[in-house]
Length: 477
Image: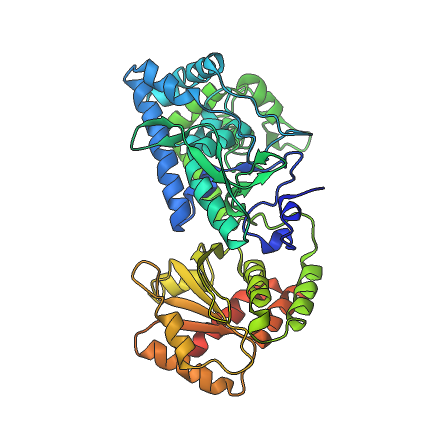
């Protein structure tokens, strides 16, 4: 299968890339989940969530104020996006546009919904529960169109990171909150086989959306009705031979057939059931096993990365190779805690230094604790890669700490090869922290090998405690 990474010869597996490595000649059955976006705290996801929320509220307000023309206009440009290669198409992607007729159908479904009319429905993702004709693929398409400009921003950053050429191409309009409408523009995107590609961060992609009307009906509403009918000793109660009384779900389904209008009516009258469902989804999303790869064996990949690290010589001639490897290694080890890597600058001073920043997207673990418990501001993690033959010292530490700021944060990682005097370098990091110039954790070859070995030996869960140990060596010395 020809994938994006193969076309551009990135020589990286899916686990080393921050975006979905899509097939070029077909689609992959993944979806963008607005609920997953809403639960993230990183700045990119937060801005996407605010945009989605604003768009949805604008539609609701237009419908409730009977501004039909505005509501239909907002729905008119929702084209199934070919450029993401996500969805159900079996061969070449062939997303269909939403013309006036389909926009009218979508408008009628939303405007006829009691959940919308009453203001009960407040988020795009809950449309799957309570509005007929809106399924997971449609919600994913809606979300993609709304945040298309943010996805272009992400794509440009990833292409700059991997030195992938970009071209200006026309795409369907994006939603502009400034204009309160759709705006046409050219997009800078990579081109594969004469088709533009819009890269999707793997941290917002799901095999199925969290909100699922079938799951809500079967596992929450019917479970509740079973208990309620047993307590009320209704006519649906049956007595088994052993005397135990039961209510069968098939009988409940006959009396309360599935419909999204029924889901709304039930939820309005029994809000605690919906609250329970929402709470369970929140816990599920907190512990979600993020999309990280498609088919490769991470134990094998860890071995491959260990070998690659050992085969890169030190020195400026191999600096680019080391930087490129470390990008994939950091993504592989710390995803989904560190996400959205981007290149800040490239300085050709003989070492071809590449400075990287990654967003702190941690929902748990050391990168979350640094912020919430240790009160170290770190929305971003600044990273320096040094392929030196000799020890790095104060100038390199000062260079990294000099990149800390109020906006970026005060936590960084120094990637380097080896030390003649590791204790001295640790002391320099401690001095920097005690002087109030930021917290720097270093990852030399020995530490990288230690972390990759944990993954290879099926001990990935120990990564967080090991990273905590590295940070603690600086923070609590």
